[in-house]
Image 1: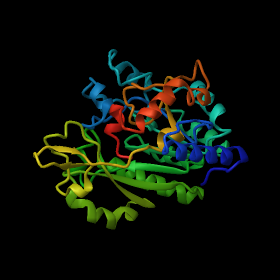
Image 2: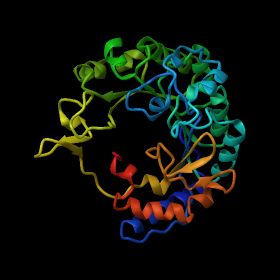
Image 3: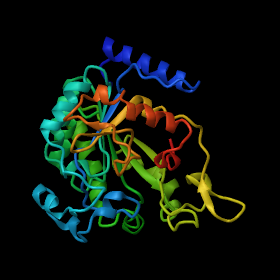
Image 4: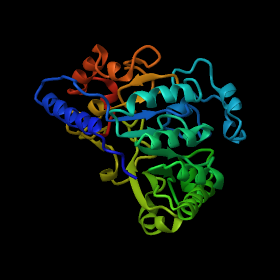
Length: 343
């Protein structure tokens, strides 16, 4: 299901790419609004993945055993002093404020940032309203909370694409990264989504995503053969962002072609060089559960916030002095988050 291409959206996209082209020549200017917006339905998660900032801030060892429909329990489990976690769930009030603004000029809305989107009980309603506004909608999930009823609700809401993370073919390989997760729940989620898609005549694209890790590298070929049997329409094998990689990392693949890092002459590891200039900070923003507008998904601790939608419209925040300063710095990868990025 594609986005509805209105005159205002097409015009906005043309201005965006023109401004980005100018920036590559040293002229940073913004005469457009975001083409896409990532909203954060939830800032909490049941799992404790070792490279995830939500897991870093989660001090409750058994939070994943809490009933998934009891949002208040997750809220009470949040560490009070965590710089990573925000209001646990985005409210419909905040969401509708975002949608009301961006539907005129944006073509895509992503429903994920740091937490697990399916934990927000209003997710299907949010997607339905975004779909009604003609936006292309995407959800990325660990799928541990997926039920048959939820799968049907998401497909019927008009969800364009759902990404299900399943980093392995066995519980041992999957659980090496998705700590606290159950691979059978991920597999069941794919079946539920396929069934809902077939029964409802839905057009949702079901994508199975696997991080390329040393723990699962022996399963990549088999995963390529099996992904359709699980119910997915497509497969993506994604390189993993790792922290503390300088001396190597237990999760780093043996073949560095499938890693974001490579070993230098001195034996230490460094991030592979990428072309400078990031289209994403010219074309989109992230909106957290509390309405903070961030430059991109790498700003996990809100270090570069442009401001809050409760005070200023997104289109204005997108062009303010903070946003322009960040983009200028991003052109030479000065911000720390740009140095770690893999775009």
